[in-house]
Image (tube, rainbow, N blue to C red):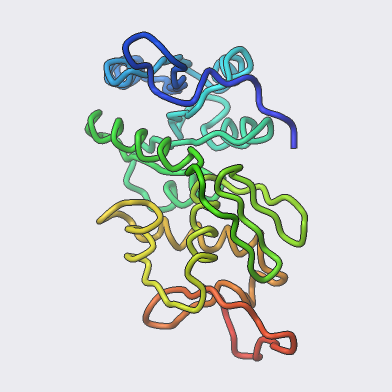
Length: 256
């Protein structure tokens, strides 16, 4: 993976001292971009703006953002392609803005690695809270011990995950989800439980959890279609299990 461009910092500006968090707002609607930028600016963030995909990539090349608020329905190069290209340069948290409440749009955004989404019209205050939540979870928790199980290793301090010694390219939410499973093997969790524990939300679209589990399986399982680590517990949710050496999936096992 290529290294990301230089980032502006790791925390909101406080009293004009210390590093600042740089947020890139990408939306072709000038009113939306102005309102969102204004709320983020008042919350203490450094804000860059772009109205289309090429401009967003150019802005990121000049000053790598700590987070991107990205409109899905951009003219020309859409938000999905912008997200893919930015992630090709390095990890960056992305909150996707969707113009419709269409579940397909939301799932597509999550499938390409968006960490969160907000459906238009939305409350700017809610968006700021979502930004704070994603940024908080993107920062390493100091002094947290590494986790190792079933050939997987997660180092929360370094925000690094490996499988059989090979680095895993995980989004922020995928990393947090894997770390949660490794901390709590053998116990079944509902999607509501995972949304609360991993996302920090008491409510939300549960398809968010489903999509992230599916993406994580694609990166940690030998056969994502017949998962042996992140197992589906019918009628409940999911459970992380370390398979025994001779364990093999039955013909009737199926992942959802």
